[in-house]
Image 1 (cartoon, one colour):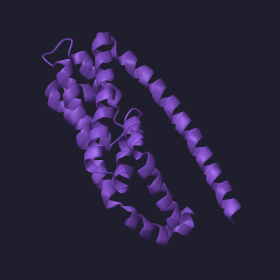
Image 2 (cartoon, rainbow, N blue to C red):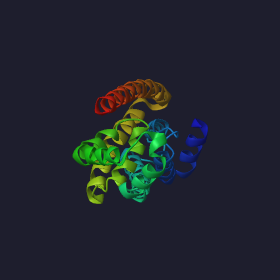
Image 3 (cartoon, one colour):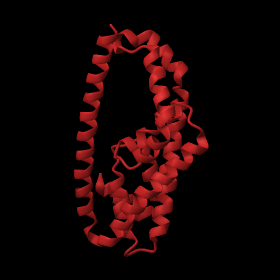
Amino acid sequence: MENWITEIMSQFGYLGVFLLIMLENIFPPIPSEVILTFGGFMTTYSDMTRMGVIIASTAGSVAGAVILYGIGRLLDVARLEKIVDRWGHVLRLTKKDVHRADAWFDKYGIWTVFFCRLVPLIRSLISIPAGMSNMKFWLFLLLTTLGTLLWNTVLVSVGAAVGDNWESIVGYMDVYSNITYAILAILGVAVIIWYLRFRKKRA
């Protein structure tokens, strides 16, 4: 996949960066680390500038996030309630669980959207619950842009700084991603255990 990504960027420049990052947001398995660090490296030998790559990648990221936000708006609480009515006994969910999750996002959504833009995989998917909770679009756009701009600036700058050693940064990012996934998995298990104990006490 790395060869395919670098070929598109070499051929289409800023447009390639924009399209690849937009796709990366919709299809998280496409690695933004490769796109951004290679984009930074390209600024050392092509007409592309660091600021240009940062702007193109941020625009692509925000465009992809807006698409996922729109999908989230289609899957609003009312539709989730219908799903729970039909499949709640299988999923072990109730309407109250849906409303509790929605209230949590209303309370902590602002910080969640911003900080999750710095977490691999989650950085893309967080746009869906933001849409589902009907977060104000201008606020979502602002937080997404700020978080994305920070992520992109760091990786593009690092890619430009290390030059043709940019692939070594991808290796470090893989380690960062794996550690992040492990932490998220542990937190997920902890939440499930807490939830099951909570339901047991209620019963």
